[in-house]
Image (cartoon, rainbow, N blue to C red; front, side, top):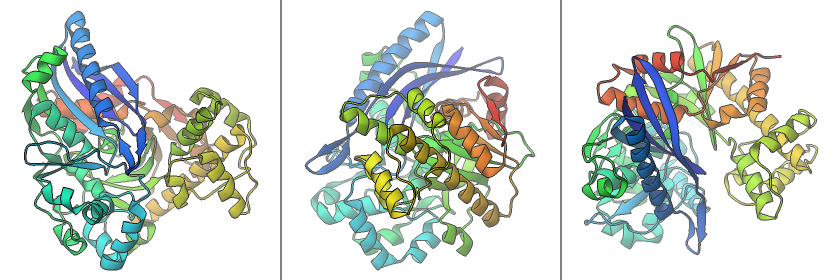
Length: 478
């Protein structure tokens, strides 16, 4: 069986999955999984690229051994990751510093300054992207202002998956779905919106070619082949390099039904698929984002805080010596009083790392809500608040698009949270179809399959997922 390796990098963990088709049937297997975290340095919050790259090489070695034992042939590899984060390289292709993480607090001041220079209306009309200080436009503005010498020395600007594709293949390209998260791209043309960068003093010479999902970048570099045991003929193919683009590609939706999706993980991304960008006053007022998807589709969605609230609470408790696994936290939350505390998940302080339980308690107090004090109450507060955010967002999505949705497809790792799935069904009044849990990696691998001729198109891809995922679960509203 021919295998496509999906390297799926989330903001908290990474994994490598083997994705294959045999007689039209989907097969996938997790080969390697690892955790990683942002690192706080004197210069701010950064990504630990050397650790991530080392883990990728470990996973590729394991994949080569697995394929040899199973009698499978690895034919391609592709990388997806979280959105907006980027790096600069010099003329030799060497990194100019560790990339800052999107949650770095320094971005807020430059977001505020960009609003003064450009205005919300101009930025949204040009890009159709939700206004958030985490977006690449503001972190690049920060870098150009604070370290202009680095930006001046840059010859290449790459997003995270683009960097790893370069390290795998030796070829540099910016993939369109990941670029579209930056608030630096016009979704109508799919090209750089350079007219926004110039007023911020950002040089544009390093902005390279933008290519669509499914682009073949060539074969593995010789040293990567030698270090991993993979054949030097393995192709490096850009999937939907933004993890949400790959996840949405793998939504197991049947043709003809009105469906929306919730890509559930560190972030919750709730939206629908459009053929063209929707950029108007209603979309701007609701702050929906127009990101480019696989096959040129538009992911019309809204970013919601997501399971970051749970992840960061768990990390804080672990740091102070109180360890919980996610299953235990889910059990505690299920037993807690429902809807006791509902907070605003859009509060800016919730985007920043550090002592999430205390942030939730302070926010509840400020909103006049009962203060959650125990881990059970804090996690239940987070989940109930997310479900309410989903309800509100879905109502605005229906109003803005004029569509009446019949079901919600929840994909990604967050689909394992059965309590949140049920709370979502109850809050929205719609049936929820949960799964596949590894939608991002499956979508990544099957987009490679399209590029390699194993599948025809996006519709063909979704049929394979719908027929080949026994893990799908239905949650009806109570």
